[in-house]
Image (cartoon, rainbow, N blue to C red; front, side, top):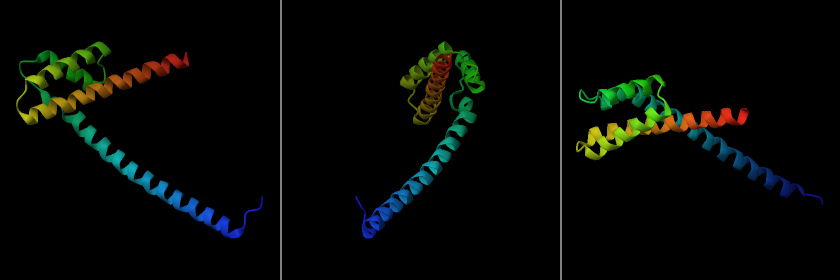
Length: 124
């Protein structure tokens, strides 16, 4: 089947438009990823200040381990439970937000550890 030149021109024009759209979308996603990474880096750096408490030394200990990325899976689960309980009891919206952000980091940490464990399992 022979493609005529006008049809080939239309097809190439559509392909160029699609490639331009993909390029713009990729650029926007990259910018959003950079901004998101910057946000979570700031939360990570300031997480101890967000949820520090003089009466919860165990929580502070677990958060310092989270910051150093030496938290075990069980410790991460324990920290998640502690932060959940504090969020439920907290009435200050700012403190509640800080607890929620740090709890999100704990969840991300658990997901990364699971991915790492699955990757090692698949390689062996």
